[in-house]
Image (cartoon, rainbow, N blue to C red; front, side, top):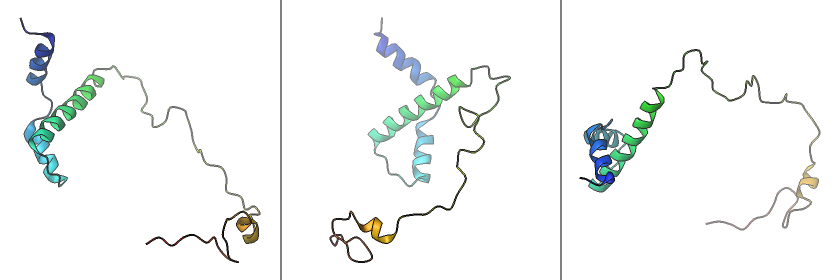
Length: 109
């Protein structure tokens, strides 16, 4: 009798949702070079994701409205209002090094 890990692996390989060739094609379209090890890993990971999505498709969603947000939110933004802001002198007051117009920072090369 095979150990459970081997049984799962054999079962897993028999129902792959994506083929190695599909992963190669997508990698080529994305201009990615995948070595053999990366190709095997990516194929397994993408197959796991697709299997999960397939499992979600088994759910009965009749009568469930599509949503884009957990809560019913019509507009999450506040109204724009013109308000007084800091003067240049107030904004520069706490700067460690300033001239009359701006903060002074070390040159980055």
